[in-house]
Image 1 (cartoon, protein in one colour):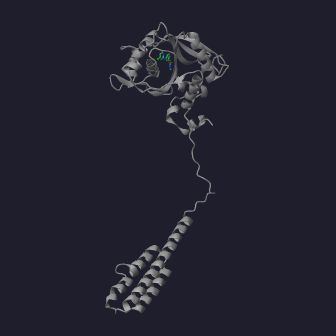
Image 2 (cartoon, rainbow, N blue to C red; image 1 turned 90 degrees about the vertical axis):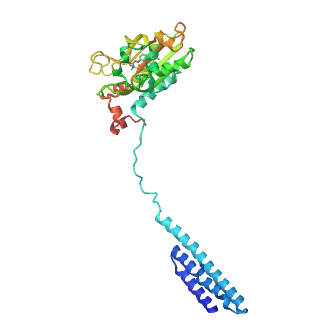
Image 3 (cartoon, rainbow, N blue to C red; image 1 turned 120 degrees about the horizontal axis):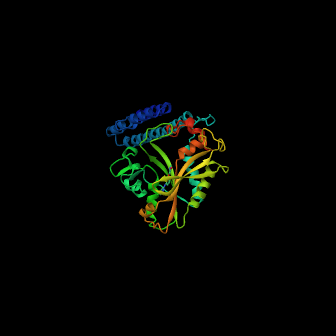
Length: 344
Ligand code: 2NL
């Protein structure tokens, strides 16, 4: 039995020495030390030994078991270390390799125009206000002096969702909502950019979805001259100090009086060309003094308060500024178009 143990020990240590993978090492452990393993079998056979032999063989068997266990543990950590080392070698990254080129995005031209206008107005003390794109009939029309039956409310011109809900056709409802929140107390000084919707067939100059930016200033003693000075600052900010403005009488249901602003044509300096249709002037926006009905419906006393409002299309401004001839370029998002207007 002594010899048997000695042989088992030599055999096991030899196998542990030569083994190269962790599964095979585990098999060796089971073969010698497992429940039905070789050493275990020897220990089970001890019953047949004499009283004198039993402790001697027992001690030897324990020693052999401990030696094998230790050898296996040692080998196990060695194999694990080797496996990690191998993985590190295989997964080495060459940090000196050139990177893959990536496309860097940028903000959309319309966003740049809107931000530019916002920056000018916030510098003059205006707040930027936003509101829902799905609007109630009340805020989109009624509150803006467009009562039921008004031709501008034609079903054919708007995207209705229900009788009472529609996609807003302008950003004016944001202004009406903001005035309401002020509960009849001025000043209200806001600029409202956002998407608007009209039932149009898309072509080079029309889109069923486009953007608008409107401004509103309500306070005591707000006059036409305040509007003119503000619009003059806007025109020069957008198109250059050398541009002149002129106001022509116009009509909007929500303003009285109403005007349209033209800027002097940069292309021909007023001599007349195809851009200004030989007039020397280019129409930029509509504006006016807020209609007393609109002030009253929003909770402001028209005897005490007055205000001006204006509205413009960022698409039109960008088209004039950069010579863009088709409004659809703004929405089809061809990177060759977009890239030309990325700011650095
Ligand atoms: C245009 C003209 C305009 C307004 C918008 C407005 C809003 C309120 C009260 C009064 Cl809450 N007016 N907005 C006024 C005049 C003109 O837009 O041609 N837009 C592209």
